[in-house]
Image (cartoon, rainbow, N blue to C red):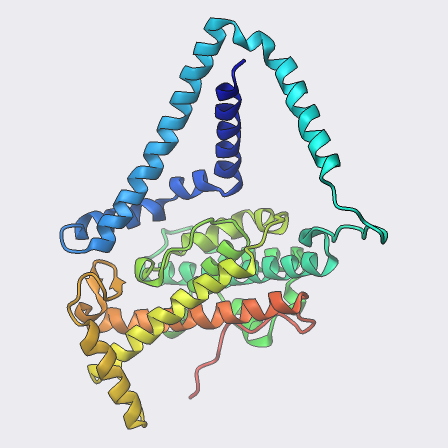
Length: 367
């Protein structure tokens, strides 16, 4: 067995370890990945960022295909030469050499060696925090799923003899997992309303809560990719119904996104919010009282207007090219994401779940 075969074996082992540990397969299998690729493909002729994104994706996919093929071919080669017979002895020798090296270069400790710090998920505060996010995700899922059911009942008429059962199913779920008594009064009142009795204002308000729900799905590692605000402008009620149908998927999970990952997502959302807010001020959709804010917004908008390689994207359009409705929606979405992730980071930094009841989701409209 040659040294090169050991090198290739270690590279293959490291490759697959990183591949599955970093959930690259899950990310590549995500629809969001290929939706973003489609957007980049449509903009590749005028946006160097799109071309860079496509090149990176092609290299990753090519590497995923090439490495296993090369590894299998090499394995066939060493089996054909008979070198594989020496593999057990070679592994034993390498293990012995590495063990000796660790002992020889181990640092001298005069004081007693401290016990290693416990892995973060073993911490009781971490477990309670995970459970808090899981229960909050289920509460958001119930509220959003009910909104989806109410929208369906507004837009379509049920066949004769068919009865809506969303209210009953949601109440049963909330009682069974112990959330009903911990919910805020406005949320309980909304869920208690008979099926079909929500007005459009309530439905649309709850539809906005799809954003915190998908953030919680990402934080709990149910979803391993969080597209930028500009790539995820539309909401999908299915993300709520999926959790309502299988709540154990959330409750039995063990993973949480770390602070660094959440901070990157928060900063990206803030970047989108600042850019979109500046554009809304420049166009006159929002008029701040401070004249300096208007000057600031005009300066940002003018410096980025029409720059295909620089301005942020909302779908396939630059922020400076987006329609009024799309721009206002993106501004609200970016603000909601930024504020929610800031709140999540404060909990992670504190290291424990709040003792107060679950936060109120439904805000009653002022008369």
